[in-house]
Length: 325
Image (tube, rainbow, N blue to C red; front, top):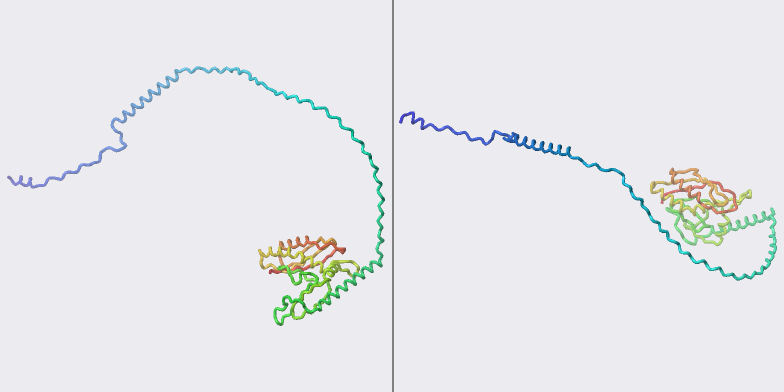
C-alpha cells in the first residue's frame, strides 16, 4: 500500500447537512387544481340562474277578475214584545160623609197690662248710690288693712336668701294664686292702691283666707275716677293677664327651643273696649328682638277677653317680662 492510499483512508469523511423540515409553500398559496374547481362551480351556478330567468319570463300568470260582487241585503226582524194589558182598577168606594165639626169661636185675647215704666233716676239717687258704693269700698279697704297687720298664721317659703339681704314681698290677698308664677313669664305687678308695704314677722309669707275676698275682687274690677266716669282697674287687667299666662308661656317656651338665651321685657300698648275685647295691641318697646315671638304674643293678647263692664275704653301700656326657667 502506498503512502497516498494510506493517507486517503486515514482522512475523516465530511459531515452531512441535516434535512430541513420547512416546505417551500405558504398557507395562503393556491393549491394545484383549486382555480379549476372554482371556475367549474361558477359556471354551473351561472347556467342554473340563466335557466330560471328563461323559465320565469315564459310563464304566463292568469289575470284576476276584479269585478265587484253583489252582496245580498241583510234583513233583520224586529220582535216587539207586547205589553200585557193590566186590568182596570176597581172603582173607588164612596167615602162616608164627614160630619162637619162645629167651629168653636176663638176666645178673645185679654188685653195685656201695659208695663209700668220706671221713672229715670234723678241726680240725687245717682249721687246716693255713688256714696253708698264708696262707703262699701272703704269698708273693704279697712278690712284688708286690718288683715295686713295680722301675724302670719301659715308659714310659707322664706323670702330671705342671705342673712343681710332684704326680703322682697309680693302679696296678692284677693286671688287664690298667691305667690304663684307661670314659670317663664312675669306679668307686670300692679296694685289697685289699696295697701302699703305691710309688716310680716319672721321674714316669711302669711297666707290669709277671708270671706270678703270675692266682694273685694268684684269691687276692684271697676274704678271711678274724679270726673265720675268708670274705668277698668289695673288689678283687673293684671288678673286677666295671669289667666292667659299659660298661653303666652307656651309661645315663649317654643321660641326658647331655637334661642335658649332669649329673655327681656316687652311693653305692649293696649286698647280694651267696654265689652272686654282687645281692639288694639302693638309693641311699644321690646328687648327680645324676635319678631316671630312678638307677633305670636300679640295674637294671644288680641284673643283675650277682659269681661264686659259698664266702663269706658281703656288705653294704656302693660309690661311683660320673659325669662328662661
